[in-house]
Length: 370
Image (cartoon, one colour):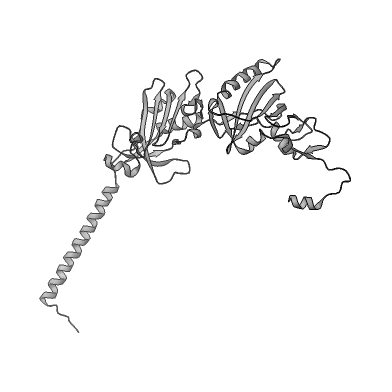
């Protein structure tokens, strides 16, 4: 039997080590408790704008302002249509306005964060009016009374599959910051708010297009009588027998030039000068006439459109022409390259000489062209 006897000094050392261990464990438990308290908040989730849900239909103006841009969407008192102030009151996308106002009415505050103004810059909550990095979103009624106003900052985390997410916010006139949860539009570029539809005539409704370039030969395309094809086709009128279309696709593209025509941007017509436009006059089977002047300016195609009803058109077409004229005449529309090209084609780019029967093919010329 081997007994190990501890001397007095060794015993005291072990006792002290035991006490230290107990203290460390106690401190660890205390630290965990503090951490849990820090992570556990007694903040009660609440709507940021509790009265806005009852005021959604009273909205008359929506503003989204950043340091570099401003969007002002206004509801027209007569037509009830939303229009964009920064784009000469062009019609705006009503669904985007609705998404913004309803989204703000549903916005929930889920956590309190800093109330120190000096800390706002770290979460992008500084006021854009003071050249800050936040975005101010505000909703007013038709009389100009404020219904909601907030500064929006950084996203916190990523959005859920349904589009909802968390973001730092604060009331415009308060320093207290929050984490909020919800989904609303925060688009800061004016063009994104626009209703980009220019005109949309049903396929096959246009029966003839007269095309007159500023410099070049005039020509016309006409609707080909249906032969069971799924989509209407067009052909060049009175084309010389020695010529043939280079591609039928391009010719049909001219005839369908006003089918679902949309723009990429819009400017006041007075601010855009077309120096050598191609003028195309579209006539429909029911008496609508739309004149399009289009030209490539720099890297973009621009088009100006005017509409009228021809003699004998019924009341529906007359009303349609008046509505189109009101909508189209104030503006010049920037178009995508494919649609702009359809509205500016020259005849010599659409046709080629027919091969003469029995003519020999010059293989060297063909290879050289390739």
